[in-house]
Length: 130
Image (cartoon, rainbow, N blue to C red):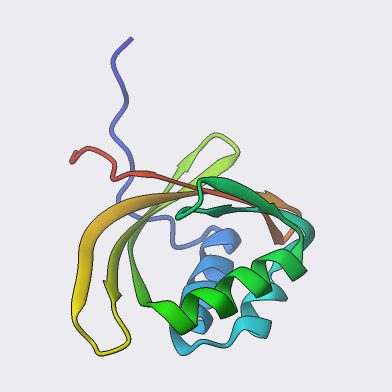
């Protein structure tokens, strides 16, 4: 079955506003502001160890450890609804503590929600260009 073209943006979806707030807070290193947008039993990927973290406390610990070792920045480029999931295509730049770029790539962050809160997040390859 052929895939339907994806809409370029979902500006009216309230989940997009939640994700924009989360990305902004993450890039400011305001961990508590991001955690407030996550469900208490959130599932979040630990990409380096290829495991899934469960709960806000585990995510907090992961990020605080991560921020001591690397300086990740994520810029959302577009949002696409795929059924109940919301996919954010993001530009990700990771630097070492000295500011040297370790990686720069576009990836997909795939989210599900529990009401207004982020329930799960997964990382995957960037979506194909439309």
